[in-house]
Length: 132
Image (cartoon, rainbow, N blue to C red):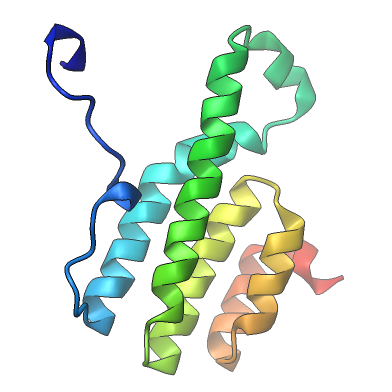
């Protein structure tokens, strides 16, 4: 209810991280970031036909900025995870977010960063477009 004089609630990726953060907490934070930005990513990745129906250009810009900010923050957190398997799993979740936004360039970069064979196979099964 920020319109009644209260502060507008912030996004989950804008919250300060209390350091030191463990690998499990970091993976959970990434999962929460990806879930909360999924709707914006889907709207960013929507075909142009459905985008034209949206008359509010500010909403389109907000969704793009929201997706970019969430993905950037999630990637920064993922780089700090020391456990290889947990980091690969978190990168896979960020990659899913990028695929929802149809951001193939970033998705391919993230796919190359995944080292665990099982996670690579799961990602390829979920997103066959990355095979090319």
